[in-house]
Length: 241
Length: 241
DNA sequence: CGGCACTTTGAGAGTGGTCAAACGTCGTGG
DNA sequence: CCACGACGTTTGACCACTCTCAAAGTGCCG
Image (tube, rainbow over all chains, first blue to last red; front, side, top):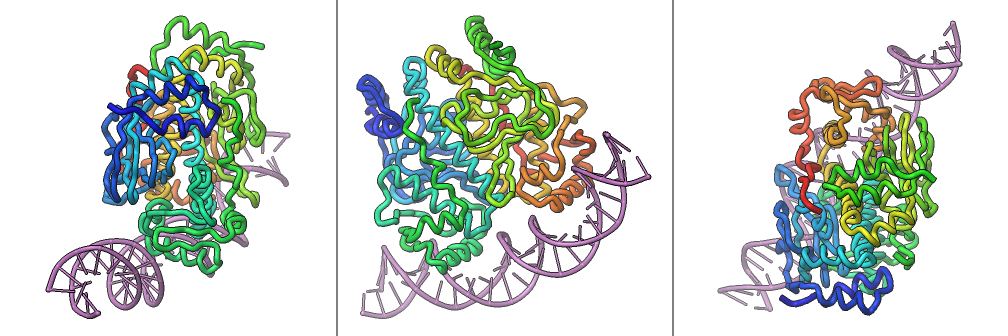
């Protein structure tokens, strides 16, 4: 089996890694694979023996909910450890689905547990990665109960822009977003129709340009104001961990 | 400074602890304190040097939101490590507030980091505790976007009952809930008025009895059906971690 | 016996949902 | 080059869930 090429790259963004640590990460078994739009990368239910490190593209975490309605609980961007929580929780309660073209690495669980046995600092960085994920969900809970559709959409756009900027995927205030309005409605918990109205609302205010899978935020400061987005909320100071 | 009396007790519920591990946990510096209704246990913003282990009573995590509106992102029950995530994230984006009479232990961060340096298994259990917290938030995101008020309330009641049952605080299908309907509205993101209607709805179906700070669920199976609550979602099998 | 906080109720308004249809855009095939 | 179908976006009309404002009722405590 091949080894991970990207683990040290992405973990290294959270804190300085020693040469020894990079070597450990570089030796972890991993399988690199590509997926195209709509393909299921991991199906929920089972107890996976690997976790998905997203290298390129975007993936969603989709929760099937009884009567065909699907809810999407997360949008992941390159550098995200999509389902690292399954390493400890033991099973997945959702699917992981590709949006557009995607490249991932499947990282071996046994090797990750091995890291936790021998490398405390790396363990804390892995832990941190799941905590950032959790912080975003907490923010969603708060935002959903206070903001209405157009503001909630603006909030998410600010969040995505912030997260993508960290990995250098924002150019000219814009980024690729291979997601339809219908899917976005499933993410934010609105109907397709109402999602569209929210898009047109922000468009009319000249705060959002979104077409052909490309989003541009002409005035993010103003959008952040409309959406009550706190630009500091993912600015994790580069402190020792 | 005193040491923690409850850390090994609560962590020991997730997995078997060795005698050595119990000794380590029992030696961790901690300060035990009591709070009464409405008192702020930790104020957000700062970088705390301790984390709060809830021993008795309930506490809320409250997010002040701009114009006086407050949002509550979590209800914690005894055994919960309320703000352990701050150990890694470095700062708190919310307040921690007592509901009713509360007993907590403030656990020293430096000592916890020390544990992560030397005791991988305990580290994984601490990590797990933050992941369970995250899983609940993820569930809230999903539930809020699919369920309407009465079902969302039922879902939360089932969740609380499940969590309290784990720590032996459910008797005769009922548990203490020192929370007003107004506060519950802030938790679920509804108005006080609409929260009350949701309460009355479940009451009329004879699925919820809630008065004087005491909740009884006469038919949890049926309530779970109405609320699309999956009773398995916090059943963490007692597997080796 | 008053406060006081919480719960309950009613009425009108607004956000968001559902159903249905029209409109674009794009890739495929004639 | 146009016809066609698939898919996503846009729009309208009507309905339902939830909010706001306001007031009355209940229970607890000094």
